[in-house]
View 1 (cartoon, one colour):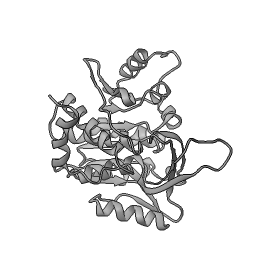
View 2 (cartoon, helix red, strand yellow; view 1 turned 90 degrees about the vertical axis):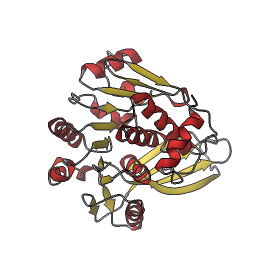
View 3 (cartoon, helix red, strand yellow; view 1 turned 60 degrees about the vertical axis):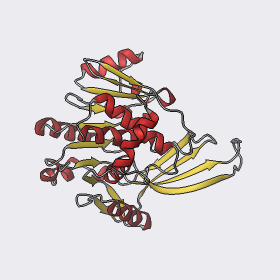
View 4 (tube, helix red, strand yellow; view 1 turned 60 degrees about the horizontal axis):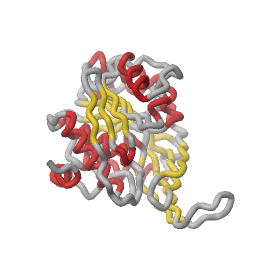
Length: 308
């Protein structure tokens, strides 16, 4: 694994409020607060680096204490930040409210520097981007930048993966040319946001994305598992039952596991098993990254969650 995975997108501080008792609207509720490093692309880069994959992160950090801490965490994890931007201002923040079972009730994002990840900035780093084994971006990235990345990936024959993040930013992908995109990873709420109103069933939504030239759609269905679609086949895998502590970052972890599997030369089903294993481990810890895992440990856990 000599060529790096290059992740382009958000780096946030994740501030999570874990509700202690049943939520009562319009009044004060008790909660336990945790503060960790986050941001979809940053999470993926962090997890992959811990799994011994070479990683570059192109993101935006504020010059505040949060930005300094985020950069320190990234560098300590082995992530290269040479192409990232530091602004004179605040770092982005993700605030989540988690129910007693660890699932997300609501979340809020403040990303004042999102617009700075421009095609112009990426053009300055074309030589770096051309060294990538995989390109990964999230929809916190401006839509014109995502379009430029897809065109670049097609010209350079480097697979690009887009993580939709959530329903509102996923909608901006609906009207752009996705031809040649290697993989998009929506959940059951984000999938309709990617498609036209004429595609009103899951089957039609998958067909529409494939007809646009998307090579693979990986549909996440929470506790029901996930399905991996292409024109040739559909592969489904169940989720393992675990006690959820914190659902933040489970999808990011799953994608990290999938990419690692591809870098190790594994087939699609093997990659899904690796992805589900990593997601299951993240669900059982605070924060969006399983810092207790290395590559060897993760590979050894696959048989625990998916025996046989």
